[in-house]
Amino acid sequence: MLRYLDEVVRAGSIRQAAERLNVASSAINRQIIELETQFGTPLFTRLPRGLRLTASGEILISHIRQVLKEYDRTRERMLDLEGLKAGTVAIAAMHGPAEALVPYIGSRFREKFPRVTINVRVANVEEIVRLVDEGDVDIGLCYNLPSQHGLHVMQTYPTRLGAVVAAKHPLASKPSIRLSDCISYPIVWADSELTISRMMRAAFHRANIAVRPAFISNSTAMMKAIIRDGIHLTFLTQPNVYCDVGDEAFVYVPIVGSNLPLHPLSLVHRANSTLGLAASMVAEQMRASLERMVSKNGAPAEGA
Image 1 (cartoon, rainbow, N blue to C red):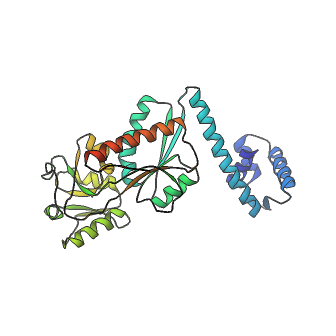
Image 2: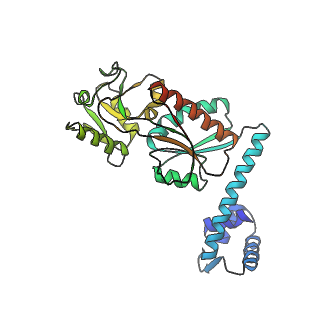
């Protein structure tokens, strides 16, 4: 019955919902009438071309969708207990981690558990908080988590922006550099919609260094593609290039003397809930990889 109602709302009519579910329209209509009788109020407004939720219907469908999510989550846990290791792990991540760290870890996880599907959504921090809080995804991975977020924080990693160059770039062999070292090379700059842009602009301003970028992009994937030539450089954190650093395609070079603030990366899941086995294992792999990466650069992870 719950799935019937959910499908009616998505389809906008009983007839279309019945066709999608392969059931009789009368059966769905009967369920709706019975529910409206039980609640003593209409759930839908009948229109010439379909149905529209009433205020009471909006409240009910929100509850129904949460119940369906919990049902699917419970079913996956039961399958895990049977040793099937099947199901879906849903992850929401910001651009950088979604283009490097998440596929790096996800592909290795699926080598061991090929029946698990990894569903990755790229979003900004506000959207990630909403997706995790509403149970649309299992795990969230985002920078600069708001202080008022209501999520369970598994771990926060104090990452910091640094210069990222191809392995053949002249700066690749340096243990660390200063901002003044960067302007000798063409710079690939993050678009203003990315937090990286604001942080780096402030750092250059404090250092009283003028910057004229060679390229500007809102895609960290494109930024990395440009610097492959060994001439350009860009500014990212370690998780933004994790798989590439592991493959020795790029080198992350720390920047010293620039007063660059920390750019904390948080691994989160929904408060007052428990991850399923597959999601828990993926989260643990993320934690282990991030621990190794951050400790390698001398910054201890902060427990939550």
